[in-house]
Length: 129
Image (tube, rainbow, N blue to C red; front, side, top):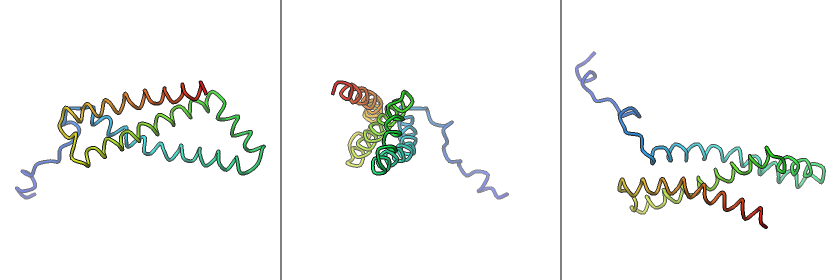
């Protein structure tokens, strides 16, 4: 083996960096992006059931009205809101703002708190109206 290969620095890995909120929110953003595919399949199922007739729509409505269905909808709404706020956070970074360590940490924490708060507000508004 050549000396160049032995002395060449290794790429940084997770063990090199101190775990920060921005890292956690970045990982969650990727996971929620993948979860949106599953949620979109549910939306398509609901629309297809509505177009298929009363029997199919009644079955879909029964599922989404069940405890499991409502839990799935609650999680899906959080996923959607969290991913949207993460996109806004990335848009802010694209403008060249919020890149300082303290500011990016505050934006990451605001993303988590905002998505939780907006999800609860959304479900409270749906329950009231």
